[in-house]
Length: 91
Image 1 (cartoon, rainbow, N blue to C red):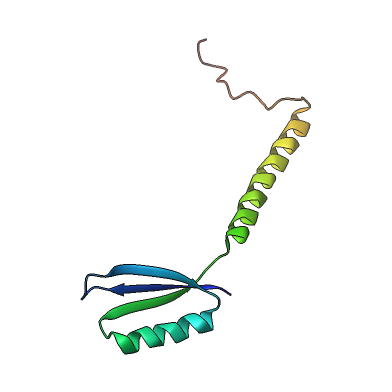
Image 2 (spheres, helix red, strand yellow):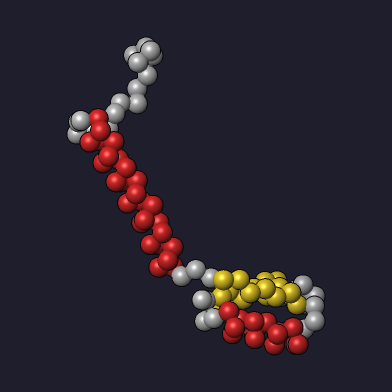
């Protein structure tokens, strides 16, 4: 599992710094090293999700929507989606 190392050092005006690490173990090792160098630095290691995982999730949701639209189309017995127009509204 990849990890994201977030470092903030407020004392020297450095601001924030983020770097993707190959593993959580390497992130935690780097975190210890940073804390040994600067006691006022704040460090945090968080799990990182790969861009490909994000894209797979997005397309999975998109395909589920497409499949549901096809089901609605089949259920309605037509080649178009049901009308969303208000039957009581003036035209």
